[in-house]
Length: 424
Image 1 (cartoon, rainbow, N blue to C red):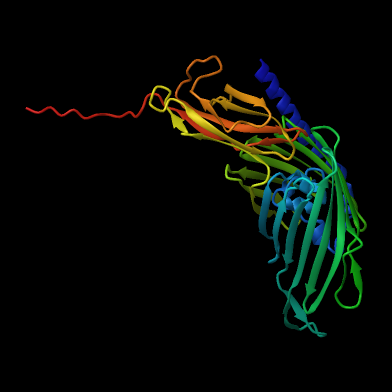
Image 2 (cartoon, rainbow, N blue to C red):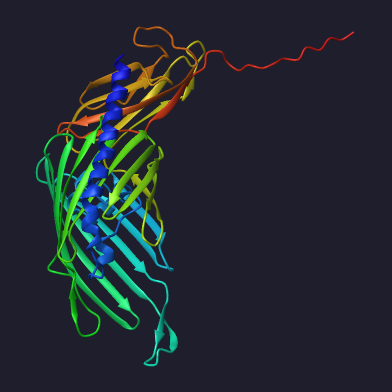
């Protein structure tokens, strides 16, 4: 009965998240009809990555990846490992957009650092003379480079800033400018986070020919709520733009499995969706889709995390026989936390996700633990594959979850048929 209640609770939480997204969509529909485009830096203001597009671009309070500095530069305090992100997308009429971002987490007194490079390139436009005769073609190109630094002022409060450099070219006309962004993240509760940012402070200002154009200032604020023991995320964002007024974004993310996430959201005027696939080696593949008046757009991204703060475990050998010469397996444990390690745990679960053996302790985990293939009561477990992972908590409440790995018990040994030859 307990498992049934948990399933109902999970279903209620996911349904509530979907309803929230639809409410935001309805509330924003009338607003969207009166919006127009063409503001300086509009492509950067509306930018969405392969992951963020799936949650409707509502990322100011949920940012936890290098590219999140575009929404909130304080996000680097939520990154625990060095991370690099790449994406490329082809939009409409030959337009393409590319992104590269790298971030390193804060260490001690040093803040977290990162950089982001984004570029937008159009297809070819016809060049005409005074008589409207076609005399050639030209392209438009935009590029933005962000340098980011962020620091935790306390376990609950983080701040960050960007230096933003942009360049624009249309035909033979070129211009560049510099501006700044600031952001803040505040953990109201362990599962509830608020995020605010001010973008385009003091510029950038670009002059292509004679008239100087300034990127409009933009304010973003919102919250993110972790549900279902961290597997689910509900996030909303309110963005106020000097040209467009106020826009609403919202979305939800749910990790169906430790290696796969699904997303649905509403991005200003259109429904969005996406998914992620995470590998044990630190690689993650993201996909996002966005409806648009010109058709569907699709984004693909890839990221890799390494070093920094982590938790990992590895069983050697990964398959053993309690009745054979290799009667136990040694599970090696490694971790590195931002603050002093508070406690650790390693659970071994069967194919039904039931915990069959628990290892845990205070402080940092030991170099290894030994497992003899028995459950909590000391009874031997049946042959088969089992899963395990290391989870470490530091003194400031940060939880590091290691990759899930497989271990196998084999007591029967190899099986097969032995031919019998009868000779006369």
